[in-house]
Image (cartoon, rainbow, N blue to C red):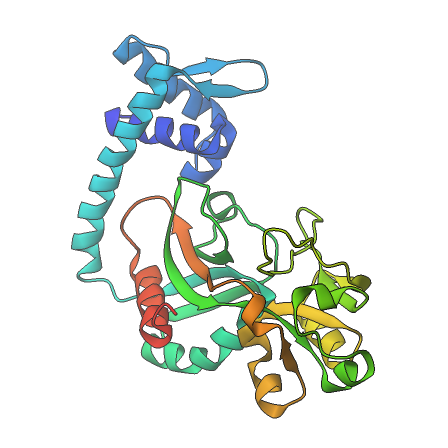
Length: 296
């Protein structure tokens, strides 16, 4: 490998935490990546990784060098993308990983997108699992919450509110809560996260001296469509994103519960791997979604 290849091998190894993972991304053997990094260490005269039989981790010199090298490679990628992108039409397979619930937003927009970009083949994986974009070769993921991985970049996909909903039949049987503490004794439909197993917290804003209400959980699941069905069926009060049940609220088959006692909006974000530039197919998808949804 030449010097730029050695730098790339080092950066990918630091990003992914192993020679084998870097090799899969670069199309090389783990041994070739390791030799490239060793050559770079020899040329620099410093140790970039602390190695054990099972793990590698950056030294302090390696951490500093990694930060600078990533910026250098990002600049090189940007320069390449500017020139290549000026002549390349968006094309190829676009792999998107997104929560099941977002199909309510995405699918009505797809006919227009495919008409505008007929050479892009869409490959959607609707799941609630947290994927490793780099390891699994995903172009874009749509996820809510914080962005802890420094290898990823993001833009807002849309904003939403988590709110409490119940069917009119349920509220007729059990009464309509007027304040959070009225939820004591009500029946709860709860969402359980697939990865962690923890329950989605109810987004209630309580006075500082007021304890958490204690509804009785009668139904738990890890799928928002099932949550919607259970709430429409009158099993209890469920917490869901507002866009999921907008049509049901408009039709009167669901009602909001305590709308003045829940938190503010949250975001779904579009995230993609690594460098600051976007490939043509990723760029047009991101720009299209922001233009149609306005990031809100």
